[in-house]
Length: 91
Image (cartoon, rainbow, N blue to C red; front, top):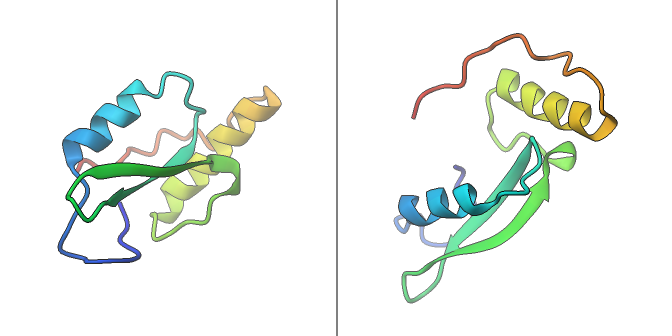
């Protein structure tokens, strides 16, 4: 998650974010989903962007490289050359 605009004290609902991501059954291997908090407090999905065209937005370099690599491999039907088993940090 990365804050970029609005009232920093109003975070999106973790439950809504997790439910939305879980429901994205056709998700590509790498992507970003932007959520916002409306003036009435509802968490809303703003947009989803494909992983091949994302900037790092503060991601750890290793994870960013993995995101780009796994998505590129999926798009080109090739092996993911960055699949080194780098663990994803626990939140």
